[in-house]
Image (cartoon, rainbow, N blue to C red; front, top):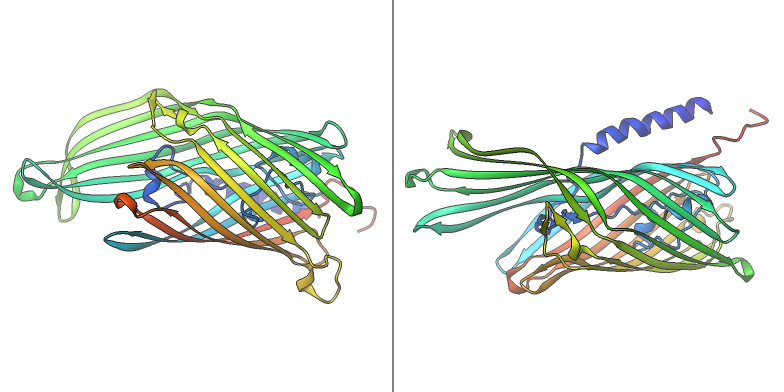
Length: 421
C-alpha cells in the first residue's frame, strides 16, 4: 500500500509540472477579450451534470468549486481530467474547423477527521488562443492587419472545510493564480510598397494570491432523501501583475522574419489586474445512491475588470446550470449497467463579451457516465458536451462545439492502519 501511495503522489507532482506549462487550452476568436475565455474548472462529474456544483457533496469526489464539500470526504482521493474539443466556426462568408486537447485538472483531497477535510491541486482559470488577418488599405496601399493571442491563467489551490454543525459546512480555497497573456498586433505591407512591417507584442504576467469561499447546508429527509443548499464565490481582488511591451520593425527573407530595429522596449512594468466579485447559489435534491437533480445560478461582476487601470468594457456574466443523475441499482450483482451513474444536464452562459450590441451567449447539453471500478470506490467518469456560442448577426462568428471529457478518480483509505495484510 505504501509504495502505491508514493507512486500516486509522484505521478501527481510530475504531471503538475507539465500541466502548468500547457496553458493554451482554447482556440476561439472570442478569447481575445478580457482575460481570455473563462475555463470550466468543474470536475468531469459536474460537467456531465450541466456544470452544477453548489449542491454536490460527495464522499469520494473533489468539488473545488464549492470548497465546503471537502468536509464530506471519507476517502483519500486523487483526480485527473482531460478533454478534447472540436469546434466549427461559421460566419456569413464561410466556415472553418478547430480542435484542441489538454489536461483539465489535477487534484488530491483527504479527510483529516470526520468533520474536517482538505484538498489541493491545479485547475484552469482562462485560456487565450486566437489569430485573425484583416486585409485593408493605408494611404491607398494594401496592408494586412494581424491580431494574435495565446496563453492563459491557472490556479494552484490549497483548500479546507469544516462541519460547524451536523448540517452546516464552510470551506475556503487559498490559491496562487498565475499565467501569462500574450497579445500581438502587426501591420504587414507588400515588399514593393516601401513601407516597413511593424509589430507590437504585449505580455501580461499575473501572479497573485486569490481566495474563494463555500458554504453548504444539508438536510436529511425521510426515505433516505436529502436537500443540499450551497453558496460559493469570491470577493473582488487586486492581482499583482507585470507587463512587458516590445515594438519592432521587420521584413521577411526566404519566408523568415528579420528584425530591423526595436522602436519600443518596456520591461517589468508593475501594475494591477482587478478581478471581479463572483457569487453562485444552488441546490441539489435526491435519494442517496439512486437519483439526484439540482441547479445553480452564478453572477459575475465582470464590468469592473480592469488591467493596468484600463477598464475592459466587458459585460456582467450570468450562468444557469441544470442537471441530474440516476443509478438504476448501485447494489446490483451481475448487471454492470445498473451500477453505472447516468448523468445529464443543460448550461446557459451569458459571457462578458458584447460586440456591436450582440451578447456572445452559449448554450449546451451534456451527457455523462460514472463507471465504478470493481471492489473499489474509484471511478472512471466520462462526459460529452454539445453546444453553440455566438451568432452570425452583425458579421460575427457562430461557434458550434463538442467537448469530450474523461476523468479518473482513485480512492483509498490511506491514513487508516490496516489490521490485516
